[in-house]
Length: 119
Image (cartoon, rainbow, N blue to C red; front, side, top):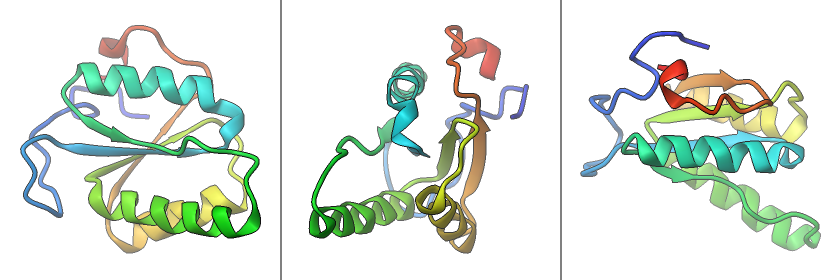
């Protein structure tokens, strides 16, 4: 994880023409509450935040959600991976983000309450 001002820097170039920078949060849903805390910090810093929200769904719905999450990664300038556990799904998302040349940042599974400490 970077420990300088670049992490939440809003001046990053992006794949689309958006007014606000877009971040996507990836990771195991076991870190869902931590993801929400990071989403709040990023939103406060001026980012539009995309992340997963559903669990325990049917196989068909899971496939749809996986496709939707890839679209979120396509939209984002930065990908934030939360937590130390990287399963098959998260690894696939990371590889997809790398194929798109997205900046990827790894955040700890314990939220740091002061967003300034992340930048």
